[in-house]
Length: 254
Ligand SMILES: [Mn+2]
Image 1: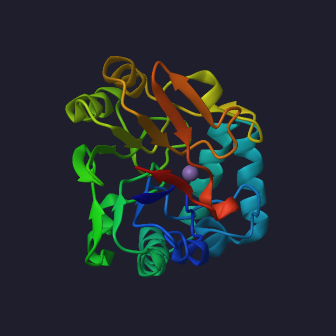
Image 2 (image 1 turned 60 degrees about the vertical axis):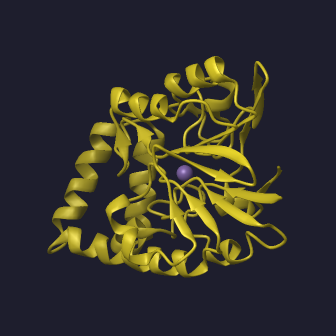
């Protein structure tokens, strides 16, 4: 059985349509929507609402780690819109409608940190299975899924407290393939060589891998990692790649 795995789709509906070509099933590890595009500032919801120049400025502040100024600037932007949340909600709904229409079946999905879980249900089609803190059998193997990210200065929409996330991971128990959005806490998996900073990984994921030794631990989140794979004991740990930029799934044969 051939399974294609993608993560960090960030609006790339065109490539998503073809992502399961030649595969029996697709796994998607989250981050479907595009809010800000650090490599093309004109793309994404923020740019749609506030224009390229404001987006350039906002990204420059965040890249310089001037978080207080970035927050003040974005507050000012949002305050300039009547009923700002309604604008975001419409933009997100438009993106989800396009992405779920493009998403092949069968697909097994979990949430990224740049997702809004309560907006998924209405877009799902038969054969789209959302799993978060749950296990399922695919091709005779046990797969465990846990979505979301951990708290950061970036305040992305689906960040969880460490203890809540850890409880979800621990509840998965022994699996053959562990599927999460964020990597295990291993420095070379977390360092983004283009953004030149560490993303947050999970100690709970690393400890579950050390304790139970699944065959694979699959994840995304870090778009340009220093290392895209490593081993923890017998477990092959793989960043499946930044699907928005590459448009190519990771292929797993089981
Ligand atoms: Mn992402």
